[in-house]
Amino acid sequence: DIVMTQSPDSLAASLGERATINCKSSQSVLYNSNNKNNLAWYQQKPGQPPKLLIYWASTRESGVPDRFSGSGSGTDFTLTISSLQAEDVAVYYCQQYYNTPWTFGQGTKVEI
Amino acid sequence: QVQLQESGPGLVKPSETLSLTCSVSGDSISSYYWSWIRQPPGKGLEWIGYIYYSGSTNYSPSLKSRVTISVDTSKNQFSLKLSSVTAADTAVYYCARVHGYFQHWGQGTLVTVSS
Image (cartoon, rainbow over all chains, first blue to last red; front, side):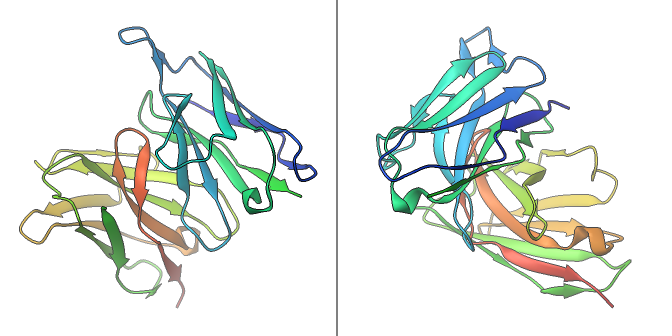
């Protein structure tokens, strides 16, 4: 199984500040055939299902604010919230879909 | 806009079989892959398995011996059965439409395993 490890486990930042979450996979999730990283990011607010933010490591899902961005390749990835808003308080998860079993990081809690 | 809705008993006794159904609206189930994911209270997400409309499946090895996912294209639904449940199977169970990543999710249903 590919193990996904996120850091930090939690972070607190002020409104308008930049927040950065890291995700490391135990093996590369880059498909050489299409040069795409099989890595997604989700946001989960209390009592709600996860919401897809980013797929292919850097493609923003339709309707997701552009303050959310994804970067990285191979085994190291980053989700950046460029200007933290009150509604961004949530737990964020990364997920690899390179190999089954598809696996998630343990989550990062973002607070204001 | 595709919508998914989980349904099934919220309480299951230990050693019995958990059964859930996901009803899909706004999209034909005869496209894409469809998946089940679960989340124990206060914990992270665990992928259970997926099914294609043709019936082909792929299960997490950690649950493979106890899991069956099936599809009913006539009802636009797919289902989960998890046998021999224990308290460790207590979780919110989500269904989702899959592209490898999980694009659309149901609201989830809490299943508690308790006598």
